[in-house]
Length: 111
Image (cartoon, rainbow, N blue to C red):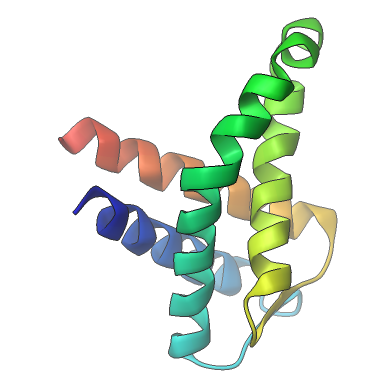
């Protein structure tokens, strides 16, 4: 159930990003967007915790900026893997990362 809620949060965050950056985000259809949200949910559940542990020393030195960059990398990887979804530009990924983080933290708070 938690995974499904995270996927819904990712879906909404990516959907909002597509409205904020209409020229930089290309989404074929809602099924592609849902696929990207599931891929992002899977990546955040499996790969992200490992990368957070591996980058912990660098994160301490950079006061958390590297943690943000790891999150941007997770969104980039999900968009690259998911067919039918493409982002253009670092700031599009950065805003999508912020929206995903906010939406998933709101879901965590509601539990």
